[in-house]
Length: 90
Ligand SMILES: [Zn+2]
Image (cartoon, rainbow, N blue to C red; front, side, top):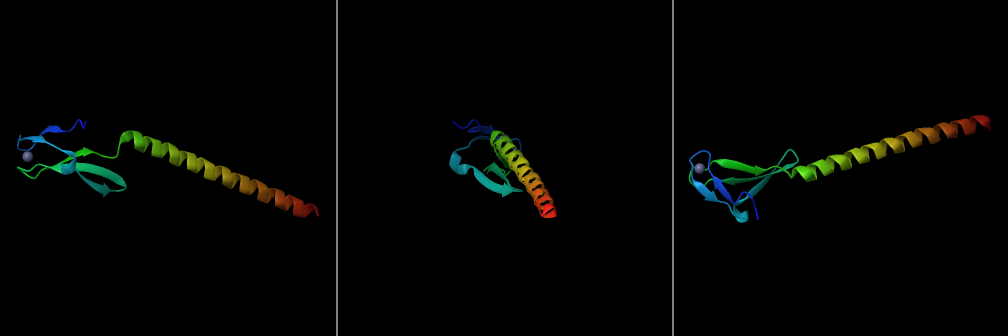
């Protein structure tokens, strides 16, 4: 069950039952924002931004990719250095 299915509008005080079909999503700065609109006063309420857990995981994943890229870069520089040494010795 969605924990936001019962909601009191902060603007007009109307009690709103929000079903999933009334939830709208919008992509803002690569963040999926879920919101709904009060039918009485048209105020918009953000229910959630992208799930924090998923976001956290994505950041972890990104860090992993970054360190992997750095490792590859280091390895490339290392092997380039070896190549030069090898050429110099010929
Ligand atoms: Zn309202």
